[in-house]
Image (cartoon, rainbow, N blue to C red):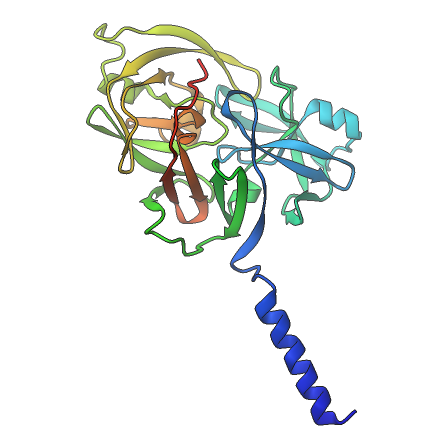
Length: 305
């Protein structure tokens, strides 16, 4: 074959590859997204080619987590080094790291050399948690209507005629807050897809008059990732706004959780924005750029009470 013909064939082949394969710099892929108990967002994860297991998507977790029953089932080996203290919603717990091998969501390899083991939960709908190691490098679209998780590069340009962009405030590499408005008061809200409910801290509770006897409240127990339980006051608010979207009257939970201090939200009115609110939207979390995109859904969704 003539050299010129070979060069032209190679050039054509390279052009075909370039235009036919989606750029990994822009769009990694999508996988089915399904709902666990009490609104949890779950995906199936291939754990080192040893089986597929449901993992919860948790923007509030600093680590990749496996529950102890999966550690035992797969006989995972401990990682070198001592255990560590990690923060959960209700305080700190001692935990040990385990070698987990490669994790895949669909054909997308997750950057996680090891995982932190936490005690088994009463909720058996998931076996592990995908946290900071995933969200620090990508934008994640939680499309509740399409039942898809879509993964993009961080900084991907989303169509703002379709999505409302919320500019947030960065706390660290994977944590950020957006602004919610509750009965006319602006409150910094940490975006936490691992939280079933939306909580406010002591400063926000004082702002809303939760503890002065002017509101009707009910005490309930709440359990965090380390199976520690604390008490929260449940109360009704007349208005709640996220972005341009008014969710009207709804319940909030007042609890001065240790987690507020660990994410440096203990000296001003603050909230943990949970799935009881987020489920009303298709939404995109771009943690590394401290921004969020919203598209309201149509329908009425459970309150998980």
